[in-house]
Image (cartoon, rainbow, N blue to C red; front, side, top):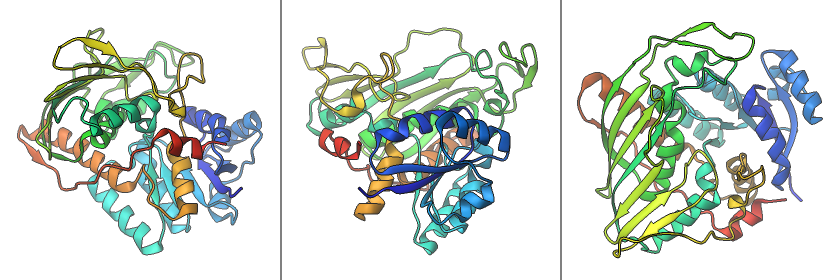
Length: 372
């Protein structure tokens, strides 16, 4: 069995999920982890029985083919650039970069070196979202013409021990949570043509209410209440509301409306969940789940297959085919998200400067082929 050697830079909260779930996938073998805080890398290495090293040694290691960038968003560009310069393929947590210009530079560097860039989110590869993709492609609700997306809460200062970066430029609800929703919309509908948005910041500071920093104030320097309208190339218009200023609401995570019916889609922040659908009779019914392996609950009631996009990229390298969590997809999502923020500043429509084809669907058979 061919294995792709994986290194990880960044040993914060999210690294545990990658390390825990990597054994699910046959092409992945994590061979070293590193962090600017070497103590953090040592602790993770001991927890998951993997090797740790300095960042420099990891980038120089001959047995590592892909380096996963799990640093904070503000460091994604610089770290991914260093990975490519070291001659390694790069896979980044979302968002892959914070500006379109950064993304273009990395794309050109990867092309020059014959390397690949992949990026989270990979939740759109989940069983529920791939089943929705199949329903749309099969014409179950006709042509998608409209929809709504809502991801609103009151932030993460009540549970995250170090929430500072969430409220700084490069984060906020659009760039932090938006990738899950926008990426799923792109894989379901296609490229976005233009956006317009209203943005605001309700609270100038947040109070941490957990852990060692309980009671500490965190400044807010990015919009936290964003309401956008996305026009897709196929003519569909989708409302997207992202906010960390909302205490409670009753809006569904994602609904898509077609010429012949409606789809009610589970939270694209997760791989699974219940799908509902109505036809021209207007009766909403639960859709029987498919046999897709990435929709099967494996952590309590939750289906969690984080790393599926990385596994698909590793297999794509072995098989010499395109990978689904591509730089083109990630960069178009960044184009959309930064366009939303720019529209909030200018008050006008922002045309997208990129487009991308929908990634290839990942059906049950293809998903099973990725698993150990």
